[in-house]
Image 1 (tube, helix red, strand yellow):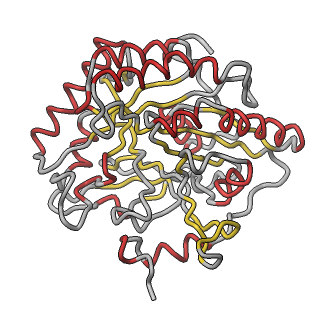
Image 2 (tube, rainbow, N blue to C red; image 1 turned 45 degrees about the vertical axis):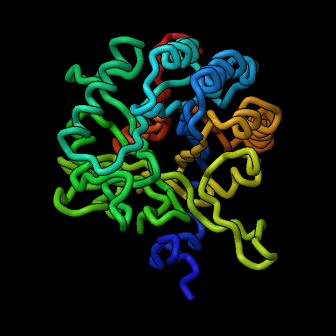
Length: 362
């Protein structure tokens, strides 16, 4: 019986979830890149203005203190990537998040919830929002051609009109619109157990758009060392998706590990080993592992976990694991830095080069 099918996880994904991690070169260090992609929604749940403001202000006040004294294998502090929803734009909220970014503790990228949209309207929405983030708040970066670029997470997981009922998007050529408006990578997946989950799991790959059909990102060309990406491909960076046999529902079925952090399931060192087992990497560079996690950090229960003792314990457990195993090196990276590291791996780099924070502070 396909007990996943009602939620839409394809049968072909199940075999992939069960595969062990590919072997790596044991005489080399294992470099692990950790990115926390926050679907940061201050107005979540229809919050009134004063509550939404308080949610953002708490992050501005408490986040720098919550990570004080913590450092990864390169001596860099944790950093948080706030994927802020374009439809919730409030200049005052972005000013507060920009203050966190100017301390070198994170970056802001683009999130969007939309429904029954059109390609032209979507294009206008994305361009206007990225320009506001950059020109008004000093956020986002420009590429070598001077274009403002951004990372993206789709609201309700419905990237490229991937829901069967067509809700929460409406744009079959969304990947094209994203790429043409400066999106450097998408970080939406995984969405399991929701129906928008792709057949491709635990992967970094390039999706080429079929402009007339939905869910073009279901499959694509795997990112690989010395393999040029397709000319019209959009980089897709997925988080881990696999079964957790140590945690079972009804003492029988394994729980699904999808990299989500929330108040009822904080990060732990045991989950960290599972994330590594997912083996998300660039083909041919097995000594580098990419761990993209996700959360909804403006929700109070999650905020308390992320800014409190559970998250700090996780950071301290990571440091202890690295002290015990000299081959383990872990790095806190933003979404933009993770994409840059993917490109370094594609070029055959053996040692990662972590760029200086563009805000100049660590």
